[in-house]
Length: 277
Image (cartoon, rainbow, N blue to C red):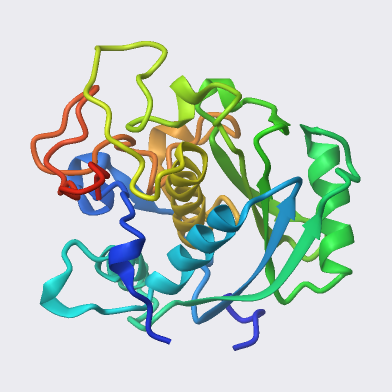
């Protein structure tokens, strides 16, 4: 993390991930407002809040590893190519061009729902302080189980990022939409609650909840990197705490060429599973 965070090959074909590709589209009108970005080595603390299976944990960790894995020409598109676009925001901001290395350094499991089952601002503060133990040299990521409600999830607030305490420590919270409002946060693996009828894709890892969480996590991670203190990259006409349009949300739902409302655009599909990536 800029000035404050310390500094195995992965078979990606097992983790076919789907992300928005429109970070570099000019029409998104994302501009830089002069504030610091997160750069260098980003150390994550994953907080598994509630009951998670092995598949959930493996997929989330695989996503983080895949940010820096180059599989060559045999596997396209690659997550690392997508992450290179995120890294390019440094150059736009006049901060040079260097890798942003993301690594999971700690994992915490809370099976007893110590802060309850409804994610509020008070919930977030309590869970983060307990999990980090005051360590400000990490970015805590709260991942909630399917039986945990997240305020605002039904209004497409599928994930969020913010700052904790006097040190303004960046954090991320990712909701699990499998039981609560899948029509808002699990598209394109679930038909949306509103808007045009659309073609849905099979979850690439076979689990709607975790595959939707990967997309939401990717979105929050991008926006934490490019706008950690609300002074980085965002749309000029959206400087509102509840409606800020940031780098990964300016064209949310556009994943490939030819996309429009209710259609992901052209994406590759695994012929065996039908999972889109």
